[in-house]
Image (tube, rainbow over all chains, first blue to last red):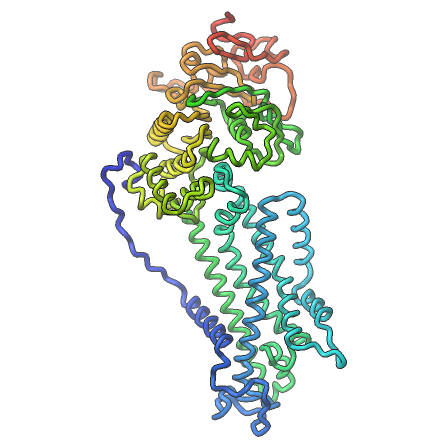
Length: 302
Length: 315
């Protein structure tokens, strides 16, 4: 490099710009387009010319996929599969995104600040995270759901209430997962000399966190966040199959739960929502993986 | 000033009763081997010690005792009053942020400049540290730069708020020799331009020789010799200083001869042993040295040393 050896600023060679071609794996594009499709369906699915998802068509019970009026068939009870999947996408995206975003924000805040300032608070936070992590995700959200959204024949819980409790319980599950990642990454970065250097210039602690710690910690959280979206969708499905998620086929898991008994007569009732869950989870994992590996490359360059 | 660290093996004495004084525009070299307390001394003076450390004694800055000041008020001094250049320019810059944003950070945060002014000031600073094409430099990431370039950036950041006192903690240790000379030259120039005081911490007597007004030699947390630079080199009293100087390779020595080294290691800083801490490694050691620790003695001409039997005898 010309800059390294010269003291005088008189002659400067302009560095030749080398265009780098970034090769991304094909899985990245597949996963990305699937996630984009799901998000688009969730946002604008109601505009599609499809039958209503909660209307039973008594004249066409359990029709095959590729039927002229029901493109993905209907359930044995006459509900349109395509409309159900689109509506399920809305709920899955709502539940997984909001719980990961809220939980991630809270977890990151707690993890980063406690690791930055250390001390007794950090010890307590770590203990709390470990306790929460020692309870299996499913059991924790199951317990929260059955307490907070209790319902029987006399006191039926509304769907809104169930969905919000579902989001709340999954948020609580996410907080320690991302919080611990944030804490670990902060411990590593806050001991770097540039933090001390910035401190020695009189920068306030929260400015240091915002400008020096967060940009370094964010990629790790992003990568794990994508993985977390995948696992939240799975937990949501599992809860529905256990009968305490969102009832009435309003989510993919709930469609799966309803169609379970009909697998011998109309197997698409199970395959379609299960496939949607599987593809979405795999896409999230691939995407998260891609974020992580591209990060590793950048790390090694530094 | 003294500094102690709480460690699992007991209290670690990092700095013992060190007294130094620096006037505006003056530069002091702090010399000693690894572990002698040089870095701790400079960080303690600024107040940048980790939570396990306790500092005793007083630090007077411009007539004001800052040793017991609340943290928020001390922070006001950081950057604008005292600033520090760190040893390793590879780790002292944030790898994911551009040079420009790191350089303007303290300008906007501390001096309240707006973005445009800060950018202009940053370009001026880069010119002052002799960086070619400063506008392009603002957009670069640290990994695109060499060690010498990064150290220049660190210097630019440190002097950005025009501090009165600059701590340079082994600023050239991570650099190769030709770049070392350039960086030292630059520091001296900046210091003279701004009438800034500087504390240059290093393990290399050769580094401080041409760039400081006075030198404090540290050993095991003690200042063992403290004198104006010329005086020290002309008339050194302390066997440790002499040994340090001898261990620098020279061109005049015949080929094939062994480089003199200082045998042995630093004493355990967690133990309180009687006698001179250098006794076990000193070529002139006597029984008195092993029994009793020598006090800091005034040898005249602002020359202080901590030895029972100084080279050249007692005046």
